Each structure stands twice: as C-alpha cells, then as structure tokens.
Amino acid sequence: MVGAAMQQEEHLVWPIILIGRTKPFQPYSIHDKLVTYWNPTVKKSMGVDLFLDENKKRRRDKIRFHFPSLSASVVSQKEGEPAKPATYNISLETMDVAAAAFFLRHQPLQEGQTFELPVFTGKKTLPLKAHVVEKRRLKTRLGEKEAFLVLVRSSFDGNMMAKRDIRLFLSADERHVPLLIEAELVLGRLVAEIVRHEVGQIPPAATEQNLAK
Image 1 (cartoon, rainbow, N blue to C red):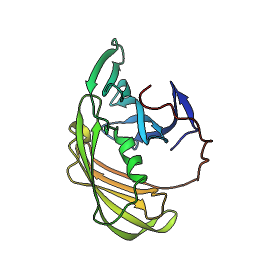
Image 2: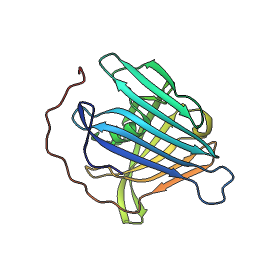
Image 3: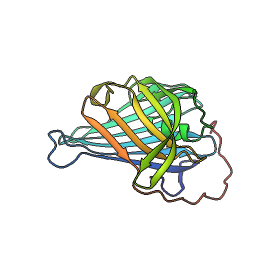
C-alpha cells in the first residue's frame, strides 16, 4: 500500500507500507510491518521503519539513508533492551528491498532485461538480481491480466533466504502493478496475490530538496 504524501525531514515522500502475516496456528508466527519512505522526485528511498514481531520476539529497526555522505544510520532495538545505533557505508544506488520493488515498477520493462540492485538489509548490502523473462497472460482475482514474469534472485540469509528464484508478476501496462509473488523461503512458502487495486492521487509538485541537503 502507498500512503498519502508526507514530509520527512526536508523531503516530500510517499510511505510504502508492507505487512506480513502468517496464517493462524502456524508453528512460526510472523506479524511484521515495513514502511519505506520513497522520494518520487529522485526515485530513492530516504529510509525505512521496520517493526518485527516473530515467534513472540519483537524488534524495531529505524534506517535512514544519507546519500551526501554515502552512509546509512541504523537504530535497532529489541523489546526490553536498549537501542543500538550503528552506521554503515552505502553507495549512491543503495536501496531497501521494498524500494527495489518500487524501482522496478518505474522501469520501462522489456523481455530479456536484467537489473542488479544493491539492497541494504540493515547490516550489510547484498546484490539483488531481477530478470524479465517474458510477457504472459495471468489469471488473477481481478480477472485475466497481461503480465511480465520477473525472476528475482537475492543473497539474503536467515529465514528470508530463498531456496530458488522468487517469481514476481507485474502488470504489463505502464503502472507495472504487482499481481502475484511466489517464493520458497527457508521459513516456508510465501504467496502474495492482488485482491484489490485503487488508483491513488498524485500530490502537487513540490520543490525538491536535493540529496545534498
């Protein structure tokens, strides 16, 4: 979900909200929320707020990207423990995983294209490769749609490590709406299917406070 435009520090951003939930009675419960703050003018994420509630263990991570100094500041806090701040080096192309998906949506996709994106996980930067395989018809809850099949390969570890390429289907129109995601993770199988799509409103153009500020 993309929220209403908001001001974060000196930037006008769109909050992109991802929510992860396991089904009831699963042996490993997940109630996670990720909010990335997308700057539509420069097409970059300015930071991430991550709220993790996994198997009764809670943690909050606050990540802010500082592109002039090519650094990321991270404050991580487990429930009942003091916050732990840290700083990491990044490149000008670095983004978080949600921003990487939004970045792909803004590209003029064509069959055969391959993108390699540096994704910051909160402690390190790992490569994410996305290959546009083909265009095909896909049955969805919103009807049959023409879609691009994109195979995504990451180097993530832990519970989010993928056993094989993640299958991402994006609508073949100019919006590239995510229609279906299929992934086999160490934690288990993940399927995310579109159930509703509403066109949002584009906020009025604002003077861009550039990355040097």
